[in-house]
Image (cartoon, rainbow, N blue to C red; front, side):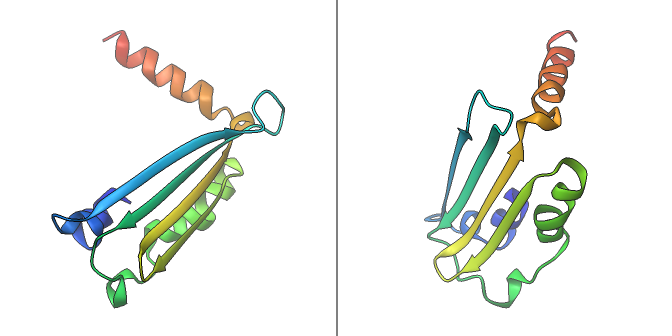
Length: 106
């Protein structure tokens, strides 16, 4: 997402912005999930430069196959938007904690 925003989207122009938000939905339950929202503004219109490629495929299909996540990406007139929903029961949190611990130990 960042690479595309820098190359073609909001971060390719000085006035462009990326708004990133997240929340834990249904925290404390077996259905708990991390929801990440990405919204670009102030950049060029997506146009034909925003054809679906590998990144879209990964967000919309690959993450579901690997960890049961869902994702969507839209190339709207106001800028690219995306939403990822990652199930915390997938072990994602444990992997992140292990990586953080490994990095901290070096």
